[in-house]
Image (cartoon, rainbow, N blue to C red; front, top):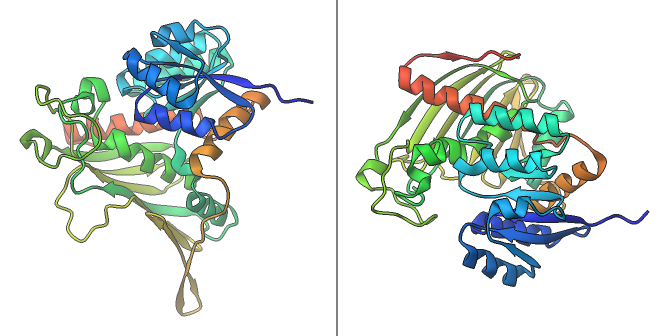
Length: 355
């Protein structure tokens, strides 16, 4: 049987939208048929660059296009919920950039709409698809690690505040700082490797020591020096999970983190062994008799992470499967992020209940 071509629309023609256009352009069985951005000249530029047939003058116009079966939403965080919900209501499958929403209330509305629509809602967490992440998951699934009872994860940048004064650094538009920006990647990957346990309590603190002084500025995003900064630039949290495990998380856009790597890291400690990734390197450690034995974890071969992720999205559409990065995973991440911010505000532990 001939595979039908899925017609895909990209909402958001910025940097991340361009990445998705390039990625889907490498895959057969899908056509990037339309693009939309609130700044139409940028959408027109992308259309010319990637050979996209249709430029819509607004996201809403693209969503009204009945020829589009699925959409990628790659816009500022504050618009994730409204556009995802509208897309699902219009019967379109959705690949949604992280974070799911700026808070867990909005994330829950997306989850409910996805369930009601019967369409695929998949979160764009490409770190699950790297060769190293897949190799670690394979070791865990093979039983080499046993029960993971403790984990440490994070991403501590020394100087990397994006777009000072723009939506990146405004809580009402972004939902937060590095915690919701890069921390969500480490949180998502950690929970996935640990077997997706549910969080039951969170204790955390956030700090803004660089942004308010206009220090620690990075190269990502366009600054708006007439804007303002009201998010954190470092967050630290301890998350207790329903299987008895704990996960500690530390992330920063800017920090005096002497002798600490700026690479993303995850250390998983299990009853039979432990695995870790730091940047692109992986290790496995276990005890053999009286000896501690450590070995490299070699990344699995295959296509690049975003191509594998995008193929999975298309596969879920065709086969009606639940995505690995499901709507529930996005909502769970948002619940934890909200709890960290709330714990920092109150100085108390936040307990999470689940239906």
